[in-house]
Amino acid sequence: MHPNLWPLLGVAVIILGFLLRLHPVLVVAAACFTTGFAAFMPLDHLLASLGTAFIKTRNLPMIYLLPLAAIGLLERFGLREYAQSAIARVRSATAGRLLIVYLAVREISAALGLTALGGHPSMVRPLVAPMAESAAEQRNPKLSEEQRYRVRAMTAATDNVGLFFGEDIFVAFGAIVLMQTILRAEGIEVDPLHMALWGIPTAISAFIIHAWRLHRLDRYLARQQ
Amino acid sequence: MIIRVEYFYWLLGAMLALVALMSAADRSNPRRWTTALFWALYATVYLAGDLLAPEAAGAMMLAMALLAGFGGVRSGKPQTPPEETRRASAVRLQHKLLLPALIIPAVTMLCATLLKDVRIDGLFLFDQKHLTLAALGCASVIAVAAACWLTRATPLQAGREARRLVDAMSWALVLPHMLAVLGLLFTEAGVGKAVAHVATSYIGLTSPLVAVAVYCIGLALFTIVMGNGFAAFPVMAGGVGIPVLVHQFGINPAAMAAIGMFSAYCGTLMTPMAANFNIIPAALLDLPDRNAVIKAQIPTALPLLFVNIVLLYILI
Image (cartoon, rainbow over all chains, first blue to last red; front, side, top):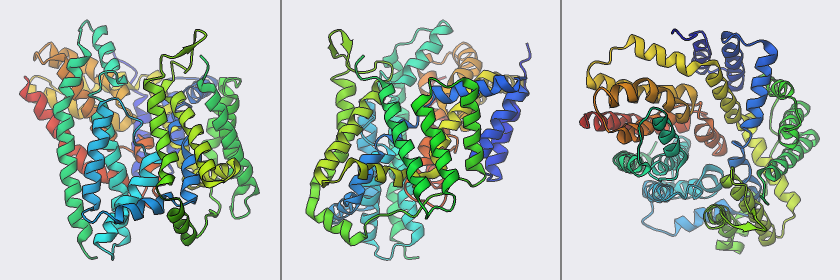
């Protein structure tokens, strides 16, 4: 049977909105309404669906909201400045090398199920990003604004890459459970350990590709602009 | 259970209510009343979410979207001590500053692994359904206490600092939440089924290379649209992975699933829809370009997607 294809309009609204660089929150609201009406939901039903989903997903922002008070207080008392001066004492440190070490630690600890070791509000902003920026500054005192932003963006990227491609080789991770459930519904029985093992080649490739890019980052940062 | 995730909803609600009050009193914010209203609405979602009628919660989400979308949410001038003061404080406190910061991951891991099965009087110590969140909540509270003890600041000062960071991130902070709502609505409206229908009826999947490429690239594209690999996987596995790759070409289902999920993650690296990974950090790191993190990730994501296609193709 032919499914209702009209809800695809909601996807079109999202793509168009982001391409035209409209306000993201408005784009999301517009996409919600387009999708709802395209699926023939009456207005009250749509509002109720949105509301139920809004309450149901409110655990999501907690991961980055809960640590803010402690991190903010420590920043006021010089945590970022301390991280910068600590890395400045390591003479061989460069932004790239520091981030390669962080990538390895993040990926391996995530593979062992320790996903909490890291994260943007609790590790990247107060510690890793200031350290990487300070290491880059030691090598090139005339670091431009653009280079500075690049170091920060790469720090956030390194945290994401390490987390994503590490956690999936941990057997008890949610994604593995999800895959097992879906395959079982189709009558295929798979050992979670095998899925974790088949993730390893990609996880290693992710490390090699990203580490090579971090290595190249140092060369870009050494450039005078 | 003894430590329920609801307690942290209330704590967070109280924090957001404090942000609303401080915003209302902040004359350096050009839109202080609408900003305060925005955070008050969000605080209500956490403080009274279970009591709200679903339609009312939906209307509140819509009101927040309109307030943010039409420029009603702004930031005040942050009040931080000058850099010399912070440097002097860093020299004085030294590595002790790291302690409360490291308490957050350390205590979270400890609670989520060692203490996860602990029961007192037959009751689980931690909320079993939201174990990581309950653990992170405990860790954050302990970290605030440790930071206050170390710096001799009051908990109210911690609240002010939390407000400074929330204010700096502004409306970007609720974007991941609203995108998650959109993702659920997509599922309810059958967007996944529609995409799978289009993908499988208009592309011939007779050659193994095309089938593998459609599967991997499809997962990445689907994730770019939905912002979440978990939403993409069931659709593409059910539409292409199981019927074509496993039954027709005989690929090991474990490899199909594992490498497929990683292809979806390549999509996560490239989409503003995964705002908590890609947009929030840009706001947290004061980057002027909202998409700076995505741009930094694309050159890693694309070669990795290619590697995935090659890996699956070799397995046929």
